Image 1 (cartoon, rainbow, N blue to C red):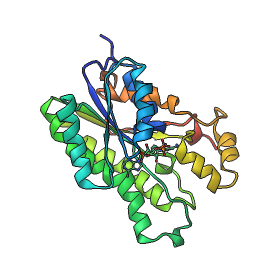
Image 2 (tube, rainbow, N blue to C red):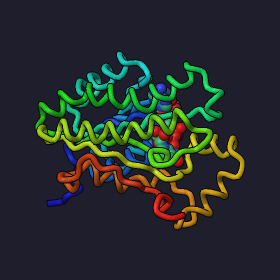
Image 3 (cartoon, helix red, strand yellow):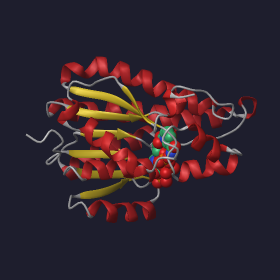
Length: 254
Ligand code: NDP
């Protein structure tokens, strides 16, 4: 038996049209999963689909804005309608607004929480019946080093990513009886569009991360492929409610 075989499985990855989401989607595609990527930017999705097709699997794009409840529900419904089932959900879509805490508007707070945390809850809720029906499933939620640490410019982001870890534990306990494993991944500092913006806005960030990370480098989206394959596959059937850092050692050093 190949513990990592995902042939016949359908995986939905929000924000799978680039960055960490695409890295994780490629990891699952390399194990044979059909991949549905979602996001708002169709041009990015076309490039992502080309990358996924090099793995010889079926892949599709379903656009959605995950801050809207109706679009989250429709995304799951459309995935099942178009691809026949839903076995793996990766709640990866996310954003950040970097300011000092006293400067945020209420709308900005909600934008970050809705994008990063509420969306993951709504999509998990929407995906649950399909997974339960087919006898089980895998949910993978994307946290952050900000699930563990704080930073002056990241109050709503850190709040949302801390929430991801606790939501993961609660869902894991609720749905273990349905053979659904729910885990979180806490990426370290990964070179993506999101962190390109962070490096422009936070002076010295690039060098500080390099200096503090024991492996001495920023991660790449490809570094996220292996953990996705593990958490999406039978290899992790007794792992649930965990929050796994994939960070080059950032969270274990000083
Ligand atoms: P990117 O900016 O490359 O990816 C973010 C993705 O989320 C995009 O594909 C974007 O799609 C999608 N997205 C954002 N808002 C929405 C929305 N409202 N509706 C639908 N899709 C949306 O950054 P990353 O790859 O770095 O980020 C991916 C995840 O990883 C995020 O949750 C982020 O917080 C987390 N993370 C990143 C780290 C890093 O170092 N890069 C570290 C720790 C966590 P589109 O462009 O189509 O809107």
